[in-house]
Image (cartoon, rainbow, N blue to C red):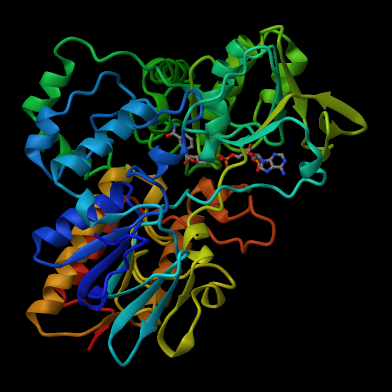
Length: 538
Ligand code: NAP
């Protein structure tokens, strides 16, 4: 095992170095071993889990059903694991990932507490030299970046932050021991998925909660519940078939829209469908009709439905109007909630609209907006992530001929299939920009990428090849295709992390691939079947 105190002297013999021990990195390690490669993982945290290791804020849980948001590569694993709720909590997901690490004896090849700072392609040796914060150097023929699309917290540069006398937290870096807000005045900045999950629980505990909202978001009821008796058994009886079916859906989650168009049915029928899906479908509410995210009028209909729901739940109409989203439905990632809007009916919760009057600064006793100080003992930053490119950009990744990844991506990320980048041979990204990533079931996306990479490396070994690199024309064509597909969807219609718009100065490029999982997987398959067309193999 690599450790900080005992750097390996045989590191150059490693076939595959994997950065990150979340869902993608763990399966990559297992799969590479299974294919006969030597592989090691470097992980910044002190345990496995990735997203589910770092995000421990109150109410944190997945908004994709557990029966889908789990590995499918091992039939025994999926038959034996028992999910207790429809949507697993963060602790349950973490214990699942820990179980996977133990079950497949993965920990012996993972070095924890080790942050990768740089990776340099060594042309003469056809390998990557990877450096860590503690000064270790590891060499590997191939490098798999399983660093996660939402893993670098965005901490806005509020003036006066250092002067705050209370405690500060970021939802993505939550203390492992938890936080007790009893008797505290709490401020929370941001109203994305993380805030929407945590606000109802913090409001129950804190003395007072002040929510600072810049952009109102759409949230639909999670409809979470314990698994019904017999429900999991029924799924397990046909699990393999369910998984195969799932891959035929754009999100890689098997949910069939009620119809192709919200505009093709009567007003009454549309309302009936929306109501039915609102009650039970959680995140998949967005698939009630197939055109909700593509056709303006269909989108208007669903946007108005949700706006009506918010107005009916929130008792103070002036508060409700602040909470009503003005953007098209789904252009920012939809959120799921449990009692989010209802929470604003509580006496100890208040909402501050910082859209037109932004936060001026943090002051010793709280948050200053438009000359008013909102007093707080604790400030929570639910301000999201430097998405998709953040973790890759934080490392100094230097490819062929000294090309630095951040320089190459100066005007926005480009890749071939969201898996590889021209100029960076033998480097692969799991759920990288240009792949469906967070727009599909992330675990299915991880498994698909890992299996594609494993087949590719096996092909290289079988053909005695030293290196593979995306060719420039193939990358350019993929970027152009992704752009065209992206423009056809209303998802690119407003500022969001999909576009990098939440990070000042970040280029505006729609980063996840919007063509849906089946079309994407088919493209990846055809590239491989064509002898890795679009790649130079040397
Ligand atoms: P987010 O969706 O990016 O939300 C960040 C929030 O902070 C937004 O409301 C944003 O406002 C606000 N904000 C940022 N900078 C600000 C500033 N300077 N002043 C005021 N407000 C500011 O982040 P997130 O909630 O952590 O979620 C990120 C993604 O993680 C989600 O979209 C989802 O993909 C994933 N996630 C999933 C789950 C789940 O499975 N249930 C849970 C949590 C997160 P603007 O909108 O105006 O920028």
